[in-house]
Length: 96
Image (cartoon, rainbow, N blue to C red; front, side):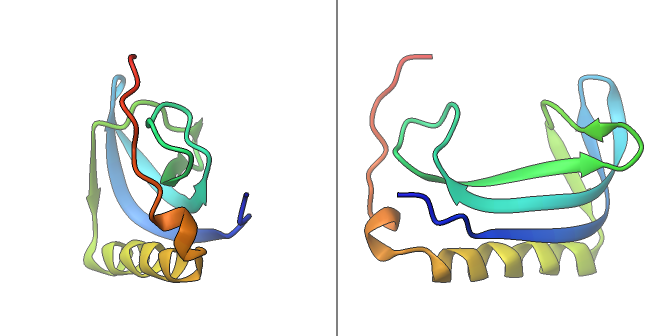
């Protein structure tokens, strides 16, 4: 079951990637099927830079306080709107 619930958040931030520190302009938060996490559903956060498209392999994220609050609020709002049965799915062991 997909919720299709998505939150968009504007950021004032920098993200450390394999190419070094990059500006991070926005985040998309959603609850859906994961790509690598061993569960049926997961909370996912995608970080984007308007200059270079999607940032990959973000190792660190530095946010200003307003952006941090907006991202935390989006995560909490999305989790509150997710059907409880999806939140209770346990992660299962999965080999990489």
